[in-house]
Image (cartoon, one colour):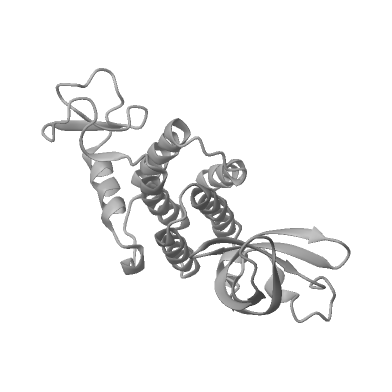
Length: 245
């Protein structure tokens, strides 16, 4: 049956001489689609069958098995992101991360969070901050949210002195041993990240130092608690290191 979907081409695989298999991230999950003849120069499917475009696809849908692309239209090719190596690196990373999360929890809200984040990066907002906000929100769908409400050791909401990604969240004065002391601005901003609606963000006024502290905490927490390995993360870290020099 014919079906119309909207989504991101998150992965492509060459198939035979002139075709490609597309993995398209939609609000209903990841759909595998064969785009026949799309590698031919004159193919009407050529442009819409490229990785990291957002498009509208008309497909011969198969619930079990691979669907076939009939026609497609590019909604957004993200020209601002793709002409900037740093932005593109973050785009690649959050695309891979989101696809991993969807495989574990196919919740429609995940697509909306991802789509909103990409659009904000395309509009010019700081890609590291937007990525960290998305990362923090995706933890809920992985079942391992960072505890930003109470001490992870005793449950107290009073006298919070720091946050420890290895422990999983906040540490109070009575439970503190030798954890790194982070400024309370870090904790406050992390809470803001977790509560803010991505679609509502219009500007970001955060110091570079604060951004780096938050990025480090979230990265350490992901390594400790999610078990997710993202191939593009290493390249992203190299780009970040070059930008910091």
